[in-house]
Length: 212
Image (cartoon, rainbow, N blue to C red; front, side, top):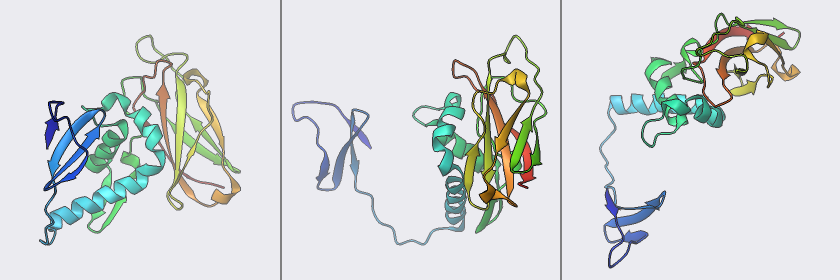
């Protein structure tokens, strides 16, 4: 792929012979039309495609949250979401082709240098989840006004729920009211902290529970 700079003839967008001109973020590019291959995909290619589809299906519903949670992990032009997908592919896909699944205990929805939740746990009551953690703070990377973010995943419906907003690190717990539609379902809970300047902690897996 070539990068075009404005010259006497300027740049172009669209197809011209065997080339396609386009722009992205005010940068003009020219690339050749890809050749269509009839060669069957290798097993390794099929495995990678299947793993990627599994990761995208799982993370797609929380793309915006992952752009925040993995913001500090961005490399070059990769988004936080892209880095989250890479993490899942490298660490949290289990099974064999074509039956890949997510290892929920190895999932992270945020990655950063703020102090991570210590001892996160969940307790299920009637249509309610109580998520708890150690309220300890420190003067270096765990502060009084760090806000807790809880992410609750229901694999049966492939739906994410969010916890209560505005709960701070020293409070040590939050209560989440779960709709009756989720009764009997097993959910997985992740917890991380965010500082007021946007800095985040690593997320911690708080465990799983059946909604009662």
